[in-house]
Amino acid sequence: MFMVIVEWDSNNRITRIAEPRTEEEAQALVTKFKPEFPDVFYVSHVEGLGQHLVVDAEKKTVTLDTAGEEAEKINWLRPERDRLLAETDWTQSRDITLSNDDAWKEYRQLLRDFPSVVDVNNIVWPTKP
Image (cartoon, rainbow, N blue to C red; front, side):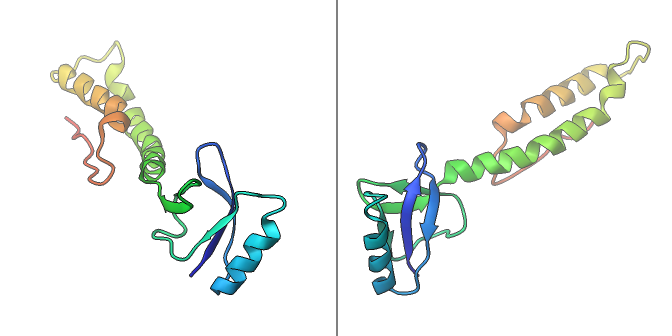
């Protein structure tokens, strides 16, 4: 499999590619794009194709962007965290006295901190009191 890397953004994430079937097609596409995109190049095999990829223009390589993948997982976590936090809003009402009030406060703080401390490869949600 080949990938022609035509253009990338300031974070070195690919924004425009072509996917030829053969090396000859890849070379022809590089020649075609060269006038408009002078840094165009091709690679012969890309691990994680279809995932977040990062370009190293100097080395003319493409690698998996694990930071981008983790950020995407964390973005998925936030709505679930917000839902869990909203489920506990009732515990913070001034007219409710709970025998385990400190436990609820701690749980809510753990939820608020969760996206910044979680291991996205081993997600373990805090336990409700």
